[in-house]
Image (cartoon, rainbow, N blue to C red):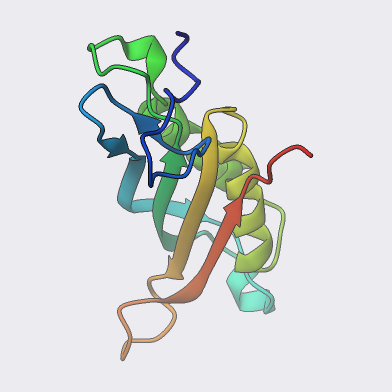
Length: 147
């Protein structure tokens, strides 16, 4: 069986592209987490925001197709190092004014790996308001099944 297909599901468990059912009858889901990635990015609507890079804090949660077996084979899992580098590159090359647009671009970069079936991103501007630890947005996207 290849590593991107689920095993037959036991009674009571719905088949899914997001789940692998193991020989023991367990349904396994895999999440990749990147927490509090701090980047500098030129972003904002107001002229004062566009004069210099701002500190952003980015959190990602990616739902990924688990391998059929966890056997320490690096090629069977989503590489979080590559994911982080893609996010940093999107931020470094950013020309958008809105966090929503930046978030959309980050999600698109996450879906470059076909094993990713869902992705959530939270982006916060860290220095916008002293009374808040961050002000920002959250976006979630799921890959739709081909019909």
